[in-house]
Length: 252
Ligand code: BTN
Image (cartoon, rainbow, N blue to C red; front, side):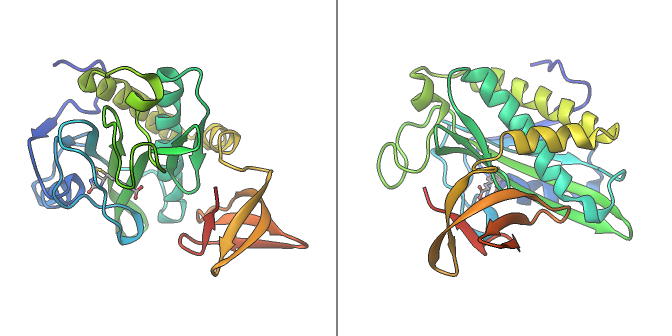
Protein backbone atom coordinates (compact mmCIF):
# COMPACT_ATOMS: atom_id res chain seq x y z
CA UNK A 1 0.00 0.00 0.00
CA UNK A 2 1.48 3.39 -1.03
CA UNK A 3 0.80 5.87 1.78
CA UNK A 4 -0.08 9.48 1.10
CA UNK A 5 2.27 10.78 3.81
CA UNK A 6 5.54 12.64 3.16
CA UNK A 7 7.83 10.45 5.26
CA UNK A 8 5.91 8.76 8.04
CA UNK A 9 5.40 5.04 7.38
CA UNK A 10 7.30 5.03 4.08
CA UNK A 11 9.39 2.39 5.81
CA UNK A 12 6.84 0.04 7.34
CA UNK A 13 7.43 -3.28 9.06
CA UNK A 14 4.34 -5.44 9.37
CA UNK A 15 4.62 -8.25 11.92
CA UNK A 16 2.18 -11.00 12.80
CA UNK A 17 3.44 -11.16 16.35
CA UNK A 18 6.09 -9.60 18.56
CA UNK A 19 6.58 -8.97 22.26
CA UNK A 20 6.14 -5.20 21.99
CA UNK A 21 6.51 -2.94 18.95
CA UNK A 22 8.29 -0.36 21.14
CA UNK A 23 10.83 -3.02 22.17
CA UNK A 24 11.17 -4.23 18.56
CA UNK A 25 12.00 -0.72 17.33
CA UNK A 26 14.33 0.04 20.26
CA UNK A 27 16.29 -3.14 19.51
CA UNK A 28 16.90 -1.91 15.94
CA UNK A 29 18.06 1.62 16.68
CA UNK A 30 21.68 0.56 16.23
CA UNK A 31 20.82 -0.15 12.56
CA UNK A 32 19.97 3.56 12.24
CA UNK A 33 16.41 3.22 10.88
CA UNK A 34 15.14 6.14 8.85
CA UNK A 35 13.03 8.73 10.67
CA UNK A 36 9.36 7.89 10.24
CA UNK A 37 9.87 4.11 10.35
CA UNK A 38 6.71 2.38 11.54
CA UNK A 39 6.37 -1.10 12.99
CA UNK A 40 2.91 -2.58 13.23
CA UNK A 41 2.04 -5.89 14.83
CA UNK A 42 -1.20 -7.82 14.74
CA UNK A 43 -0.46 -9.19 18.17
CA UNK A 44 1.84 -8.27 21.05
CA UNK A 45 2.71 -10.90 23.61
CA UNK A 46 4.07 -8.34 26.08
CA UNK A 47 2.55 -5.00 25.07
CA UNK A 48 3.77 -2.24 27.35
CA UNK A 49 1.53 0.39 28.91
CA UNK A 50 2.39 3.46 30.92
CA UNK A 51 3.96 3.22 34.37
CA UNK A 52 4.89 -0.45 33.96
CA UNK A 53 1.39 -1.66 33.07
CA UNK A 54 0.72 -4.15 30.30
CA UNK A 55 -1.28 -3.32 27.20
CA UNK A 56 -3.66 -6.11 26.26
CA UNK A 57 -5.29 -6.14 22.86
CA UNK A 58 -7.19 -8.86 21.03
CA UNK A 59 -5.07 -10.28 18.17
CA UNK A 60 -5.91 -8.93 14.71
CA UNK A 61 -8.61 -6.51 15.85
CA UNK A 62 -6.80 -3.29 16.71
CA UNK A 63 -3.92 -1.03 15.77
CA UNK A 64 -0.82 -1.58 17.86
CA UNK A 65 2.21 0.13 16.39
CA UNK A 66 5.30 2.22 17.08
CA UNK A 67 7.09 4.85 15.08
CA UNK A 68 10.36 6.64 15.19
CA UNK A 69 10.88 10.38 15.32
CA UNK A 70 14.17 12.18 15.73
CA UNK A 71 13.03 15.45 17.31
CA UNK A 72 16.49 17.02 17.65
CA UNK A 73 14.81 20.43 17.45
CA UNK A 74 13.29 19.89 20.92
CA UNK A 75 15.34 20.25 24.10
CA UNK A 76 14.85 17.35 26.56
CA UNK A 77 13.03 19.76 28.89
CA UNK A 78 10.34 20.13 26.21
CA UNK A 79 9.84 16.38 25.73
CA UNK A 80 6.24 16.62 26.93
CA UNK A 81 5.43 18.35 23.63
CA UNK A 82 5.75 14.93 22.01
CA UNK A 83 2.98 13.61 24.26
CA UNK A 84 0.85 16.62 23.49
CA UNK A 85 1.46 16.42 19.77
CA UNK A 86 0.57 12.70 19.57
CA UNK A 87 -2.54 13.24 21.72
CA UNK A 88 -3.61 16.06 19.42
CA UNK A 89 -3.08 13.91 16.31
CA UNK A 90 -5.12 11.04 17.75
CA UNK A 91 -7.83 13.42 18.89
CA UNK A 92 -8.07 14.88 15.40
CA UNK A 93 -8.32 11.39 13.90
CA UNK A 94 -10.98 10.23 16.34
CA UNK A 95 -13.18 13.31 15.93
CA UNK A 96 -13.01 12.77 12.18
CA UNK A 97 -14.03 9.11 12.59
CA UNK A 98 -16.70 9.77 15.22
CA UNK A 99 -18.08 13.24 14.52
CA UNK A 100 -20.94 12.87 17.01
CA UNK A 101 -18.88 11.53 19.89
CA UNK A 102 -17.28 13.37 22.78
CA UNK A 103 -13.56 12.89 22.40
CA UNK A 104 -11.19 14.00 25.17
CA UNK A 105 -7.54 13.83 25.99
CA UNK A 106 -7.10 12.54 29.52
CA UNK A 107 -3.85 13.79 31.03
CA UNK A 108 -1.18 12.93 30.26
CA UNK A 109 -2.03 11.21 26.97
CA UNK A 110 -4.98 8.85 26.99
CA UNK A 111 -7.77 9.26 24.49
CA UNK A 112 -11.35 8.98 25.74
CA UNK A 113 -14.48 8.58 23.69
CA UNK A 114 -17.71 9.17 25.58
CA UNK A 115 -15.67 8.81 28.80
CA UNK A 116 -14.18 5.42 27.88
CA UNK A 117 -10.53 4.85 26.99
CA UNK A 118 -10.04 4.11 23.30
CA UNK A 119 -6.30 4.67 22.88
CA UNK A 120 -3.10 4.82 24.87
CA UNK A 121 0.33 6.21 24.08
CA UNK A 122 3.72 5.11 25.35
CA UNK A 123 6.62 7.37 24.43
CA UNK A 124 10.18 6.23 25.10
CA UNK A 125 12.89 8.81 24.44
CA UNK A 126 16.64 8.48 24.13
CA UNK A 127 18.57 11.58 25.06
CA UNK A 128 22.01 12.61 23.94
CA UNK A 129 23.46 15.68 25.63
CA UNK A 130 21.06 18.53 25.04
CA UNK A 131 19.03 16.69 22.39
CA UNK A 132 16.27 14.14 22.10
CA UNK A 133 18.06 11.71 19.82
CA UNK A 134 15.32 9.15 19.25
CA UNK A 135 11.70 9.09 20.23
CA UNK A 136 9.79 5.86 19.99
CA UNK A 137 6.10 6.60 19.94
CA UNK A 138 3.96 3.56 20.74
CA UNK A 139 0.24 3.71 20.09
CA UNK A 140 -2.50 1.26 20.93
CA UNK A 141 -5.85 2.13 19.36
CA UNK A 142 -8.89 -0.06 19.93
CA UNK A 143 -10.53 -0.57 16.57
CA UNK A 144 -12.74 -3.64 16.04
CA UNK A 145 -12.50 -5.24 19.48
CA UNK A 146 -15.94 -5.69 21.08
CA UNK A 147 -15.16 -7.23 24.44
CA UNK A 148 -12.71 -5.95 27.01
CA UNK A 149 -11.39 -7.53 30.20
CA UNK A 150 -13.78 -6.68 32.95
CA UNK A 151 -16.69 -7.32 30.60
CA UNK A 152 -18.09 -5.75 27.41
CA UNK A 153 -18.33 -2.02 27.74
CA UNK A 154 -16.32 -1.39 30.89
CA UNK A 155 -13.64 1.28 31.15
CA UNK A 156 -12.46 0.69 27.58
CA UNK A 157 -14.09 1.15 24.22
CA UNK A 158 -13.31 0.83 20.52
CA UNK A 159 -14.29 2.46 17.26
CA UNK A 160 -16.48 -0.60 16.58
CA UNK A 161 -18.39 -0.18 19.85
CA UNK A 162 -18.83 3.57 19.38
CA UNK A 163 -19.86 3.50 15.73
CA UNK A 164 -21.56 0.10 15.37
CA UNK A 165 -19.49 -0.71 12.29
CA UNK A 166 -16.30 -2.55 11.40
CA UNK A 167 -13.28 -0.45 10.45
CA UNK A 168 -10.68 -1.09 7.76
CA UNK A 169 -7.50 -1.03 9.84
CA UNK A 170 -5.19 -0.11 6.93
CA UNK A 171 -7.29 2.89 5.93
CA UNK A 172 -7.47 3.96 9.55
CA UNK A 173 -3.72 3.60 10.02
CA UNK A 174 -3.17 5.87 7.03
CA UNK A 175 -5.41 8.54 8.59
CA UNK A 176 -3.63 8.27 11.93
CA UNK A 177 -0.23 8.58 10.24
CA UNK A 178 -1.36 11.61 8.24
CA UNK A 179 -2.47 13.36 11.42
CA UNK A 180 0.69 12.32 13.27
CA UNK A 181 2.89 13.64 10.49
CA UNK A 182 0.88 16.88 10.35
CA UNK A 183 1.11 17.46 14.12
CA UNK A 184 4.82 16.58 14.17
CA UNK A 185 5.57 19.03 11.35
CA UNK A 186 3.47 21.65 13.14
CA UNK A 187 5.64 21.17 16.23
CA UNK A 188 8.84 21.14 14.19
CA UNK A 189 7.92 24.43 12.56
CA UNK A 190 7.65 25.99 16.03
CA UNK A 191 3.85 26.18 16.33
CA UNK A 192 3.91 25.15 19.98
CA UNK A 193 1.11 27.52 20.99
CA UNK A 194 -1.28 25.90 18.52
CA UNK A 195 -0.50 22.48 20.00
CA UNK A 196 -0.90 23.86 23.56
CA UNK A 197 -4.23 25.45 22.68
CA UNK A 198 -5.65 22.33 21.05
CA UNK A 199 -4.44 20.09 23.90
CA UNK A 200 -6.04 22.29 26.59
CA UNK A 201 -9.22 22.79 24.61
CA UNK A 202 -9.82 19.05 24.59
CA UNK A 203 -8.32 18.14 27.94
CA UNK A 204 -10.61 16.10 30.16
CA UNK A 205 -11.94 18.11 33.14
CA UNK A 206 -10.09 21.28 32.11
CA UNK A 207 -11.33 24.19 34.22
CA UNK A 208 -14.06 22.05 35.71
CA UNK A 209 -14.57 20.80 39.23
CA UNK A 210 -13.77 17.10 39.18
CA UNK A 211 -13.17 14.35 41.71
CA UNK A 212 -9.55 13.31 42.04
CA UNK A 213 -7.93 10.51 44.00
CA UNK A 214 -4.81 11.80 45.72
CA UNK A 215 -2.92 9.53 48.12
CA UNK A 216 -5.95 7.23 48.24
CA UNK A 217 -8.32 10.05 49.18
CA UNK A 218 -11.03 11.39 46.89
CA UNK A 219 -11.32 15.14 46.76
CA UNK A 220 -12.65 17.85 44.46
CA UNK A 221 -10.22 19.89 42.40
CA UNK A 222 -10.06 21.98 39.27
CA UNK A 223 -7.58 21.14 36.51
CA UNK A 224 -6.00 24.45 35.53
CA UNK A 225 -3.36 23.26 33.06
CA UNK A 226 -0.19 21.30 32.47
CA UNK A 227 3.27 22.75 33.11
CA UNK A 228 6.31 22.53 30.81
CA UNK A 229 7.46 19.33 32.53
CA UNK A 230 4.08 17.74 31.84
CA UNK A 231 2.85 17.91 35.42
CA UNK A 232 -0.90 18.37 35.94
CA UNK A 233 -1.79 21.64 37.65
CA UNK A 234 -4.75 21.30 40.01
CA UNK A 235 -6.39 23.92 42.17
CA UNK A 236 -7.18 22.24 45.51
CA UNK A 237 -9.03 24.77 47.60
CA UNK A 238 -6.65 27.72 47.98
CA UNK A 239 -3.60 25.79 46.79
CA UNK A 240 -2.31 25.18 43.28
CA UNK A 241 -0.63 21.76 43.28
CA UNK A 242 1.40 20.07 40.52
CA UNK A 243 1.19 16.31 40.12
CA UNK A 244 3.35 13.76 38.34
CA UNK A 245 1.90 10.61 36.85
CA UNK A 246 0.67 8.11 39.43
CA UNK A 247 0.32 10.86 42.06
CA UNK A 248 -3.20 11.68 40.95
CA UNK A 249 -6.08 9.77 39.38
CA UNK A 250 -9.37 10.94 37.95
CA UNK A 251 -12.46 9.31 39.49
CA UNK A 252 -15.13 8.82 36.87
C1 BTN B 1 -1.09 3.18 28.07
O1 BTN B 1 -2.16 3.75 27.95
O2 BTN B 1 -0.77 2.62 29.12
C2 BTN B 1 -0.12 3.16 26.91
C3 BTN B 1 -0.36 2.00 26.01
C4 BTN B 1 0.54 1.96 24.80
C5 BTN B 1 0.36 0.68 24.02
C6 BTN B 1 1.12 0.66 22.73
S1 BTN B 1 0.65 -0.70 21.72
C7 BTN B 1 1.98 -0.39 20.65
C8 BTN B 1 3.15 0.03 21.48
N1 BTN B 1 3.93 -1.12 21.90
C9 BTN B 1 3.84 -1.32 23.22
O3 BTN B 1 4.38 -2.26 23.82
N2 BTN B 1 3.10 -0.37 23.78
C10 BTN B 1 2.62 0.60 22.82
